[in-house]
Image (tube, rainbow, N blue to C red; front, side, top):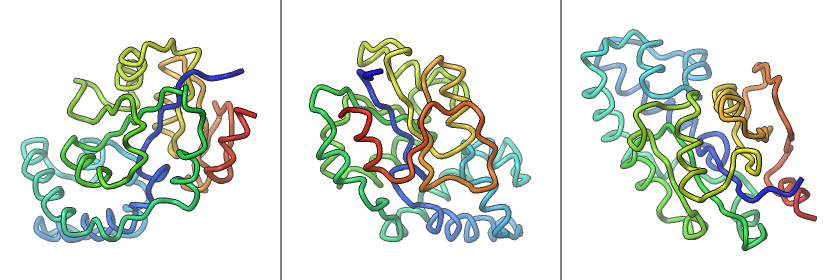
Length: 208
C-alpha cells in the first residue's frame, strides 16, 4: 500500500545514541552508588525513562531529580551521538507529499537539544515527546496523537522503530510497523512487523 505518513522513533532508529546513553547513565547512577553494566545498558536503552529508572532501582520519588541529572550530563555528550548512515539521504529522497513525524520517549528538551541541528527536522510535520502526552510508548496515545495532528488515519501510516516497545506501540495503535534492523537488539523477538528494513534507504522501496 501507499502510506500517507511515516512516523519515526529516534534512539536506535535515526541516531546511534546508545554509546552516549551508556556513558551518561553510568555517570549518573554512580551518584546513587549504583553500577551500570553492559547488560543493563542493552536492556534499558529502548525503554521509556520511567520504565528504565524503575528497572534500575530508582525510587519514583527520585524520578524528576534523576531525569534532570541525566539531561544535564547528556548535554555535554551530544557530540557522541551520530546519525545512522543513510538517514540524511533518506529524508532528502522521500516524497514531498508524505507527512513525516517523530514519536519518541525523549523529553522535549532532550529532543530539541539533540535533533535541532539536522536539516531534515524542517520536514517534520509533528514531533511528539514524552512531555506531550500523559502516556508514553508502548501506549498508543503518543503515536495516535501524532497522526491526529497530521490528519492521517492509522491504517494509512507506518511507524518505524527499532525496539519491541515501538512494535507494541504500533500494534496498539493499529498502525503498520517497520523494523529498523540497523538499530535493533539482535536478541529481541519481533513478531508483528509489516516491513523489515536492513538499512535506512530501503524505506524508499515503498514509494517506487
